Image: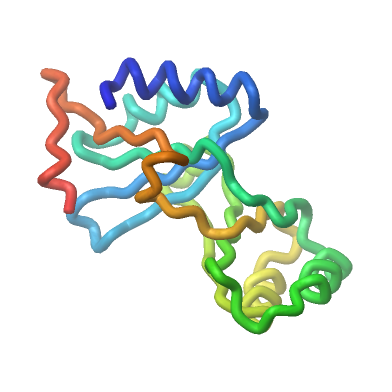
Length: 163
């Protein structure tokens, strides 16, 4: 996908959604991943401009959101009691950041959990924070993603150099 096509596609997606989940993978960094929510079309161009050449940006067309909100003891009780399965398939992804927070910190806070005990532990660690809990999306699913390797100043992406 070209940079212009990517920007156009994500902008259209944001017209129908008040936020979309983004994943940035940074090459040659030990598989460094950052999950966060984009909330307006201006952030797409900013993200691309502030990323390094060959960084991999994935935006998910749809996610399975289980819950979101401010983590309190009641929030933890409600979400853990509603999860009767011992293991989650796929794993749950807990995302703590918006693009602005990612931009300010230079990275994002997120966790994956495989069972109720891990879910409770992560939520306890995040009391007072706003989180979104989703079924972990597959970033290889081409039907559910828009994907861009950030091009260099000549417009060339080197996806082969990424992984």
